[in-house]
Image (cartoon, protein in one colour):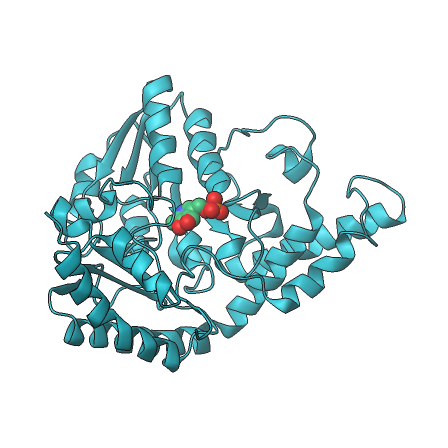
Length: 386
Ligand code: PLP
């Protein structure tokens, strides 16, 4: 059997060797607590400072505006709860979209259920683009936060964040973006995006799982959600995870340097994959925006096929993909993203996301195009979706 073809980079990526090398000294040699005043403590502090500087460089912000967290989910939680609780005296209304990752949606639902906040979940069009007219209509004098993702994790659609930021200008409403799927695939300059808070997760761009970033623009009210020591300028307690901070910063710097060439190469591979699938598999439809999508995402629905069955069949021939979000696969619920885009529950069940990475090759695409048509045809014959 040939080497497995990994096409699930939107779920997670391997840690690149340069990142492992950069992290290693901070596990054993320079293991000090950055709060300690002796040599290895100070060296660890310097490593944290350098990592923060490097992240700030990529985001185009001040180092003091960069907070390290434990993951993208924590960054989303901290951004939304932190601003909601800090601005509670100003209002109780939050605006987000129907297609966010559950780290945003479930946080908003929790604030509604237990703390009486009101949340508007904006609709999207059939490509997954947020309805800007609905955003304008939803704004009230009670609105204290808008949270709109940069790129969707299931279908790859990139949102018009700059337009959202322009629309909010002068209203004093902070704009948060879950940019987890944009890490390594999109420009993350916070001023160009016009955002006040931005979440990232290291494991989407070849750093380890379990490390994230939250950018918080200077002056944005944020109530910490973890109490304890004074780390991260009193905004997130807990002894710093020095090796992982170093790893994230190394990976992000490399991703930013490689961004133009990587995105160009991946977009070409992705377009070949999309064209090939649509041409060769009858009853296949692209999901997400045809052009405004992250370079690594090719996502589809197939009529008359169950996504889970398709994944298993592809796994048997050594192809790793995903149906909808990795976080929702395993549940029979049709994807909330595809439903919000107007797909029927039946069609939404036949979803497949193939996401490319920096080591993906033309041969990988060719192999998918070789096996996918027959696999779909066979499944339709033996396991028709009722
Ligand atoms: N937001 C988006 C858009 C994601 O794709 C993910 C992970 O898949 C997350 C948030 C959560 O990130 P983490 O796995 O680091 O908690």
